[in-house]
Amino acid sequence: MRDHETKRSEAWLMIMSRRILIATDYLGHGDSGGRLLREHGVEPVYSPATDDRTDDERRHLLTGAVGAIVSSEPITRIMLTEAADLRGLARSVVGYDSVDIDAA
Image (spheres, rainbow, N blue to C red):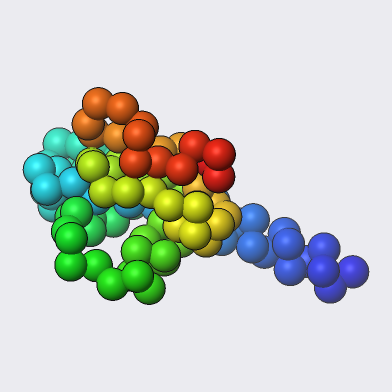
């Protein structure tokens, strides 16, 4: 019974904390995209793309996000493994060559 209650609580938290990671250089706080997301009950989390991320930061970048808008930053199998809540991934560049499609 406790497992069922825990799963229900976790599902409720996921609904209540719908977050979209925005990891691009050109979308930022206060832009119209962020306002639109908030109007629809989604909280944008800004983390601009950078080559300076540590392996640990990269691994946990998508953790807790239900969606992500990313630029050319590689999306690896390890990142996707840590992204249990992720339902959608949008690239702001052409192509998915830096996304581990097999892991997705």
